[in-house]
Image 1 (cartoon, rainbow, N blue to C red):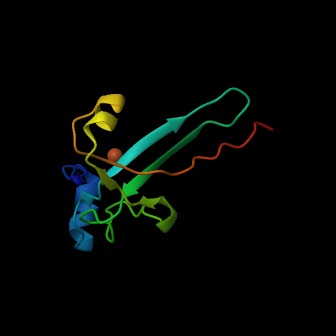
Image 2 (image 1 turned 180 degrees about the vertical axis):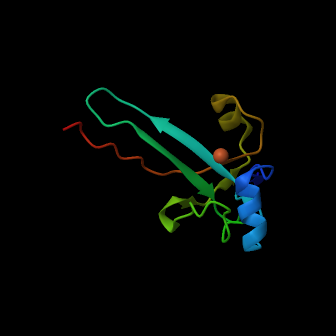
Image 3 (image 1 turned 90 degrees about the vertical axis):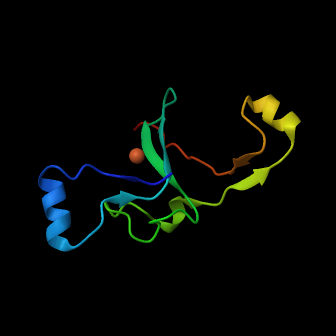
Length: 99
Ligand SMILES: [Fe+2]
C-alpha cells in the first residue's frame, strides 16, 4: 500500500514549495546478507501501485518494479502460511563478493 512520508519538517516544507505530493508507491524493503558477500539494502515496487510514476523520494527505477500475480490455490497459501488468495512475484537478488 502506498503511504505518505512525514510532512511536518523541512522535507514537508520542500515538498510544498515544489508543489509535490508526499506519497511513496507500494514497496517492500529488503536487507540481504550472506557470509563472504557485500550486504545489500534495496526495495522493490509493486507494479501498478498508486504513485508509481511520481515517488516523493524519486527512488523508482524500472528494474525495481515487479508485477505480482494472484494465486488462488488454498494449498499453496497454507504452505506459505498466508491467507488465500494471495499475490506473489519472482525476482532475483544478486550479491557481490566482498573484495
Ligand atoms: Fe518504505
